[in-house]
Image 1 (cartoon, rainbow, N blue to C red):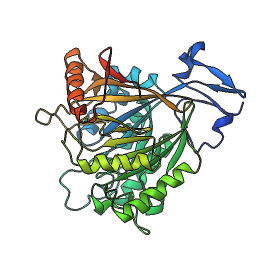
Image 2: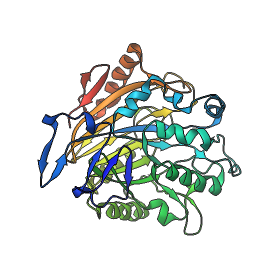
Image 3: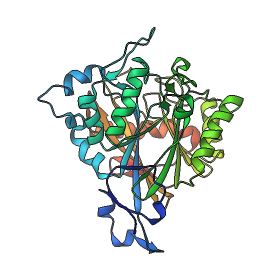
Image 4: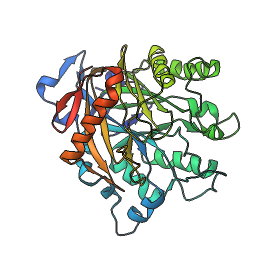
Length: 369
């Protein structure tokens, strides 16, 4: 039957058609959920897509103390994070004790890897995109430290690297019963872009008419498709902060990504949840909000409330998307009834331009693609 893996992402998997992977979700699947064909077990896999994750700055002084368990950053939401097959996020900080501040930035985000790395692992973070406008806040040395720290924790990454070719290369791994390929890039902060001889992030304009974007991102998608993954995701740091609706340019760019073969667009950057759009055969999570940070509350945008966008696949096909609400306040907790109600009302409103239909699912919502 091939290999048996327990929990987390299995990197660079190439023999998924002969593998059985058992983790926290699969062990609870009932007989009705399973079928067997050609000696391969098929079952459901659930991946949680979360937004901007900043485990640095003032959080170092809360969870980096010797007598504090870094796992407590997830509060009473921790069991839920553990209950699914893995969580994808955008890591919007470096994890390093080295490096100098990149000049002329207003905000600098850096986490102490001694607590932040195990905290991410405890939160079932399976993949972290590094293509964003804070990955290089403390220069190339801190960026490379971040990649090394996450690799040591078994967390897959892409979107940054020692050269542009490395930064744009797709990540390939398995989550549950699903072979995944991810391309990642940012349209924020060109100064952090990797070059042929300088570390940095995968940067590209989010403009489907831009020839260089079509070439670079198109090539990355083709490379990701070459191994015929069950799920091809694009994790994109796009658009401005504190925006409730994606621009027409970003909507068009998301459509272009799906037209090129991307199954799911994992959007982040706005720090607030935006609409889910079902386009063609793909799913576009226009913005997944935040997962954890110390940002406080911005006006009435509700950035202290967010969703974990749980995508369930059966034999590689979308079965449902469940929106699970939570609260952020220098840590994570389950949403109260009032917070969950605010999120339901808000996501309905922000989804009106896309005519997305949600159904009530406890305190959250669900979509059947």
